[in-house]
Length: 147
Image (cartoon, rainbow, N blue to C red; front, side):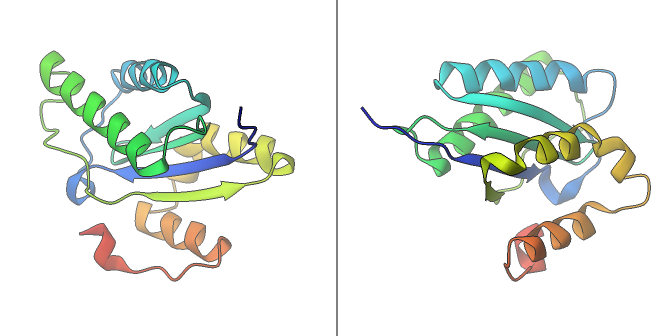
């Protein structure tokens, strides 16, 4: 038995950050991803996003590696979007993703941050948000991963 307490804040974007994840169907996508996370025996604390990207805050089962987790979410949601034709302009997810770890003491703050995505993005571009998240994590931001 493995015991872990790892909180991941994962962000992934649509291809070329195309603004195709439109309301009101975006909530259906979030519910579908929530179900995918549950099937992987992982815990989703919050999901939200805007037209060109999604934030997922979760704990991942110790037997699931991060790359496989993100690949599963992206693959399942891509198939679901395509088969249900809910975002006609959606072509695919960006190949890359960003993932940041957080402590238990940061959990509520990250959940609130994700809840408030629509508010943040009234004045903040996705690229600028990612640059801030990278800086907060002590990582160098490289625009080539957004292409």
